[in-house]
Image 1 (cartoon, rainbow, N blue to C red):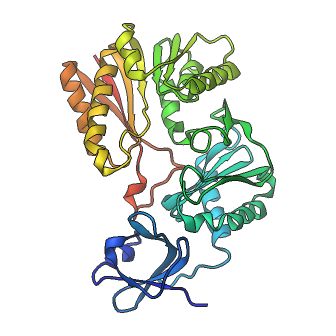
Image 2 (image 1 turned 180 degrees about the vertical axis):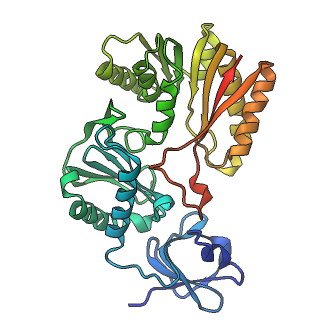
Length: 388
């Protein structure tokens, strides 16, 4: 049966010819018939030349997420082939003996716009960011079970937060709700049913490891600590003291639990408090500070407000840093690009008047790859600063 068509305006085919997977509403001339949210469509140019196939959305500005380009056809092996390709890449960049928690599918970075799959020691957590992907959840689960029989105990769909109108959370296979996952031989208790996102923030793995290289014998402050990832890496490297701060008591309890899991006698303080308030009221200076806030900017509209928040946060962090200290500072806001983030941190630095050198520019780990044709997939940016 032929698919409905989304017809582009003249000249609007260029981005898809460059293999960018998003079709925006402003590029669409019309449709061949009424199309349901999540339905698969063919995209054609103004002369009816076929450009690609993808899922239609009637919500938001992205009306089609392309899955196949040009004459490539969407086949029943699509999910199986994409999963095998993504898994192969992870075998090349990770040592499964020391790390069994990682991202398997990173949306556009792995050729499936709208799909996230994270893996925690034989447990798969799937997030749909489009109705089209959500409607294929059973097929995706079948592809996982058939491809990775020896690596699959549970498959959990967690899409209520990413698709509030249509997505739900439910078990596709198995019934485990948590596991102790391993990252560079450090243990983390992950609960994908109750935790944020898919249960853990996997994108900071390489940056957590780098933090350890600066932490031996140091007093370390980890702000917005969530489950304590940076804190535990600091302690594993021999930090003198680690302080974890998060506004959520639940997050602080998880950080304490994960620290106990790895280092029962650690010199670790976990504080439930607003980070800005904590740094304002506590006069102690730290040798290493991590600023890893949630996304301050969720949209273009909030860009200016978010920039000011990043500036205030970095001023506070720099003031709390001891002489010759190290600052790890991050933004995961997609609308705050690398240049704006750098300039915002520089503006904060100017206000402190301290001599500061950039040691590293950071990003998400390689299991969160960026499609070269879709630069928007690069969202995490960070700086490591040496502050005299």
